[in-house]
Every structure is written in structure tokens, then in C-alpha cells.
Image (cartoon, rainbow, N blue to C red; front, side):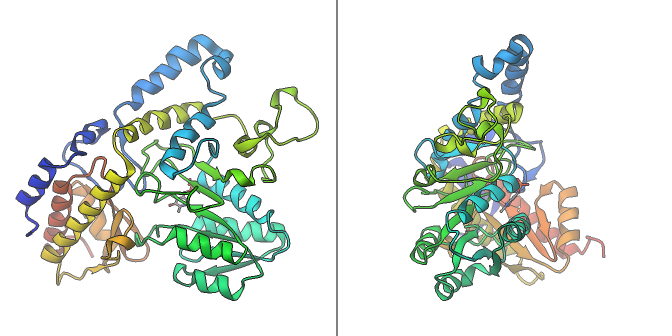
Length: 403
Ligand SMILES: *Cc1c(COP(=O)(O)O)cnc(C)c1O
């Protein structure tokens, strides 16, 4: 199929997820391919926030914590996210940032293997994970080993009796490359290590099976593919089998078994509640809860199928329109190795992307020369993809992107 605009319109016309686009506020004339950085506003979010503010907070004051379910919101919303993770209820908690949750998960994981000395971390991972892993290693007196994803299994095998924890992301935030979480989790377990996965670029975009894959811990953010809004709280998954002994480092009062007894000794709660820290972010949780409604109307398998079809269409447009213009495709062509974005390399990546944004096509860049186009099949259309690539071709051909 030649990737024409007519072909794109035909594909949009038969797309079963097309009606979901109107569940998001997308400004006219904008092609939004940056939802892997910040999802757009779901149309239900303002009403949900209004409701919490005017029907709960204003009239109920402090009784909102109990009467409006604010105190339990991290568990309730965690349960909704757990469904996207392939996690049975009671293993996912919502709160704080990914950075905080990653610190907590990594430390708790390392404390399950105190006989070991090495933290093995994905060298291509998001910087926050690497910075925090370095701090956790210093705190616990462990050795940090940073290895690229492609070398993780080998590093595990060579250091088999020393690796306490393996921490990695299934989707590379720069390249969009997808790694086999199940196989790497198994390799970690075969080596006696515990796993911590960062799911920021996976949850809501790909089917996940944390329980089935025997993942130990996972964390992620909710403002990218979940469109929970700026400042939306992160989530932490801890497999039930670890709950009785998990010892997380941020022992805030709401992780206590009886927080309102105000006792002087810390006694961790049963279950996932021991991963709670402080007071829930009620307004952000409200926005996130509203954003999750759209996931009741599409299965993750449907979302994934459309995402792959959209990125396939992007690649067809790339081959047809961008050849010979100085671009290099970074994201794997193999659909089994592709997350939910397309990344191109170009020496003028930053200037191209800035000019593209002025022309209504929003993606982003990562240093030194990568252009990222995020694909969220809940609202991105085939026409969006065609228009984005066509705009990029016009721009690259014209040379009108500064110097
Ligand atoms: C976006 C992102 C984060 C962000 O962490 P915050 O603490 O929520 O800002 C962490 N990890 C990965 C892989 C990300 O893509």
C-alpha cells in the first residue's frame, strides 16, 4: 500500500478506536505526537476535578478523607492501574513520583538479597533511575554495575552469585526499542536476583503480565500514556509474595498498620499498604482516576494492535517521503521489538523539531540528535501520522529550519 493521505483517511474510517479520540482535548490544527512525555487532557478531567473540589472538599472538609474515599484512593486507583499491568488486585499503590517509587522499590528489592553485593542497572535507562541507583548503592554499600540492555542477560550470568537486583525498562525512552521483560525476569530469577521494572513507556501502551511473568517490583508514571495530567502520581507494583517481608525505606505514617493510633514505633501495614508513604494527592488522583475511564472502553490488546499499525504506517511514510533527506531510523522495524514511538536521528534534530512545532506538529527531541514521535492509539490518527511526516519532508527539503 502506498502511504497516501487518502490511504490514511481510509484507515481512520475503519479504525474501531477512532471514536475514543473525542475523549481528549486536542487543540485544532495540532498533530500531537508527544503523549509519551505528557498526555493531553481527557475531556472528563475538568468535571471530575470540579466535583472533588465543589462537592467534596468544600462541603465535607476533613470528612472527605473518609466519606469521599480520599484515604483509600491510592489503593482504589492502584487497582485500576493494576489491570493494565496484568496484576491481581492488592499489589499496586499510587502516589508520589516515579523517582520516589523507584527509590523505594529498588531499596526494598535490595533488602531482600542482603547476602549479595551488586545492583545491575540498564545503562540506557532514564537518567533518574541511574542517579537513584547510584545513591541506593552508596546507601546500602553495594556496587553499581551499569550495562546496556543487550548485555543484561550476559552480565547476570557472569555475576550470577553477586547480583542482588536488576533494574531496567522494557521500552527504551530514547529509541523506542522493546525488550523481553518475561525472558529477562526469568534470567534474573535464574541468577537469584530480584527485578525492578520501570514501566513509564509501557503501561497503557502495551499488554503487560506482571503476575504471570513473576515480576518482583515495578514502577511507572501516569502522566505519559495514561494522560493523568501534569504532576499525576506514579504507581508501584509489589508482588504479593514479597509483602510479608518487604522493607521499604520511606516509612511514612500511612504505611503504618494503624496510622491513626499515632504510636511511637513503626509497624508496617499488611499487604501493599506498607508501600504507602504520606497523605494521598487527592486532586491529582482525581484527575488520574478520570483519565483511566477511557481504558474501560478499549483493551490493551486493541491499543497495542493499533499502535503497531500506526507505527508501521509511519515507517511506510518514512520510506516513501524521507529517504535521502539525512534521516536515520532508530526504532526497530521488527514490530516485536518496537514500543509505542518512532525515533529518527538527524544532525539538526532540535531545530527541525522546533520548526515543526511552529507548524503544528508536536514531538520532542533527546540529545544529541534524536527526534521522538510518540504514538498513543487512543487519540493519534493515521492522518496525523501522514501529516507529521509530510510536514517533516517539506521542512527538510526546504532547508528552512535555521542553522
Ligand atoms: C518519564 C520517566 C520517568 C519520570 O520520573 P518522575 O519521577 O515521574 O519525573 C522515570 N522513568 C522513566 C523511564 C521515564 O520515562
